[in-house]
Amino acid sequence: NIELSPSSGVLNYGQFLLFSCLNQDPCYISLKQGLFEGLKAYRKVGGGFLLFRPEENARRMQMGADRMCMPSPSIEQFVVAVKETVLANKCWVPPPGKGSLYVRPLLIGSGPVLGLAPAPDYTFLIYASPVANYFKEGLSPLNLVIDDEFHRSTPGGTGNVKTISNYAPVLKPQKRAKSQGFSDVLYLDSLKKKNLEEVSSCNIFLVKGNFISTPATDGTILAGITRKSIIDIARSFGYQVEEREIPVEELIEADEVFCTGTAVVVAPVGSITYQGKRFEYKSGAGTVSQKLCSTLTGIQTGVLEDKMGWTIEID
Ligand code: PMP
Image (cartoon, rainbow, N blue to C red; front, top):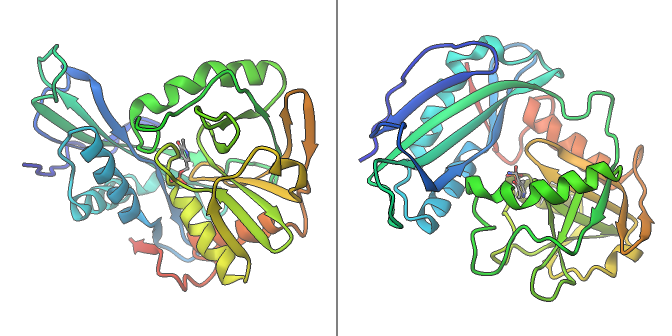
């Protein structure tokens, strides 16, 4: 049984912890079971706050909980907890255009059990922290590298759910990429080592003329909520969007490449380096990614009409 009860009020900057609930003593944290989510609350021009598709995060947590043998909050419980957390911390939501309140729900197993079995108790809590816009001075293109020594996910594993361990495999390759001057790593599938998967914390899209392609979420890729939204926006603009297997060779032909995720929203990719070859892509004014990005951020911040009904207004 999951019952929500707000556990505290506003804490210090960057340390909000609200809505700790479920049963139990988080001193005994399960090393096996943990799921998290990430979404943003924006302050609207003229007052009020907007949440972007929180029920999608709730659904993704439920799907992950099933894979991880955990109970999960209902969609309603999840959304209520997110709303209350934002409202209790509304003084920390940055002014319009200056950033957002990043909200991180977390579901973890707990209880005094060492063995390989689902935990006896579970804790659901939400952290929140103000964050600036990811790119402070407009969009700056990412320079990615494909590192085929490492993989972040494997078929039948848990790469398609947001477990707390999913960032563990990417730390070392990311560190190596950064030390070589790259922004991040683009991963290939772990079996054939030839199809694109995703970047450490965002999904990837290729643009070629009127076609936009993104790897299908076949069990090894996280089904990003930004990805899903960008697919709908791109289709509404008349682009042909395909979710499919994308062999790495297609990088040679692409006009544009961009990444999507809650943190980056839509980030243009300036270059991708693979086996020593560097492929460069269009970025900046007049690109497809810029058009998609300004539409999505316009909806998220209440500047554009939300025809899709994606935002929830709270105040
Ligand atoms: N892939 C991975 C591995 C991620 O961690 C994230 C961030 N949640 C994404 C993609 C993008 O998902 P979303 O658009 O829901 O933030």
